[in-house]
Image (cartoon, rainbow, N blue to C red; front, side, top):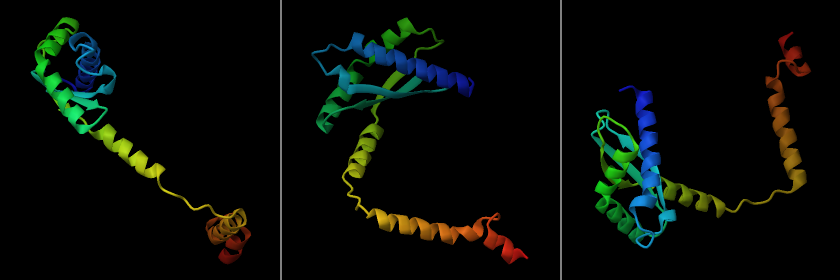
Length: 149
């Protein structure tokens, strides 16, 4: 199967599994708004698919949601089988995707960095000095033309 077709199949499976969350899981079991299907990686023969999910909340909540998804694996496969026409319905394996949480940690760290404020006149002097240092690189400047003669 071509790479482009595999990408389309993965996106289609991702969309259908995300939609299936509201049909398979009961709202009382888990907060459905806290679950995001971030990626699906189907094997080339479509026999298996790894479903990457991100869960907003504490680590214990993530583990509980992941075990809940794994317990409803067959229900998700049945839903995908009904809504998507493929030669084989892949067997789904759910895994936690921590990339969103890591990204949030990085953004949180960046937001807490204190940047010292510079005085406006010092900034202008620094810019002028940097400009003067780079002027010799400009082939159209007078000083550059005088050096070449």
